[in-house]
Image (tube, rainbow, N blue to C red; front, side, top):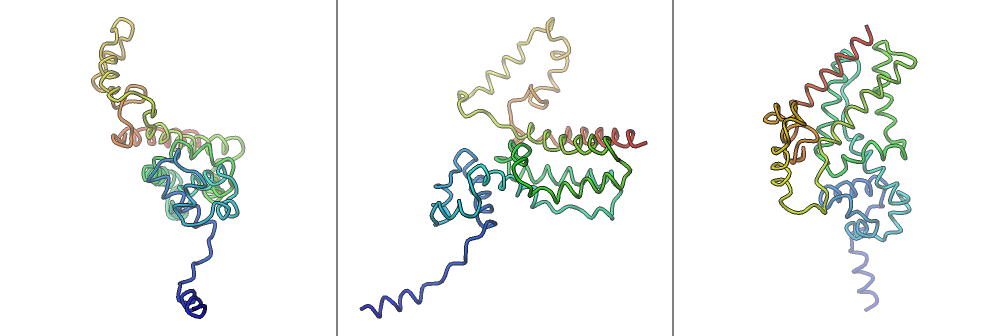
Length: 236
């Protein structure tokens, strides 16, 4: 009987060693499916069929795992060659690529910018952007300001676009909000009420649908065009 057990164990396929990349990729899939609030080391370990200690060994704390998972969204973006495009076209393409990546992982979008401060995995992205801006002619404080304007615009804009309703808001709040918005006093809010027909549910702070369901494509393109135009002017 002991020999039979040995044979059965021998026939079982060996599992590939767990890696940090495996854990981060699994966390990304888990957050996409269940949301960030559902992510715990125990829940992810159960999903992966391993012990929680294995996750701690590879990625550290949950905060470090969340940071690495957030950074993976940018890591998966394949940036265009900086030699094939003028600097302004390169920035435009990269902004669109980042927005598309964040739309594919909306549950992580609200924290991508803030969580990157605790991990250096975004440094290749930083290097590429800084190099393109430097080659364009930006230098010194202007290089910093331009870099911050670009990265802050893309991450901040899409974070706002993909913001979602709080979980504790009563069901059907959208209808009540829309009614309250349309009842705004035109004497107090003349510009708002004059333009409410085009603003409601299409402009930040006057919408009830998230960009997850109602993406603000045209507004993003208009804002990106304005940003790049401003950078060209600043460089000139």
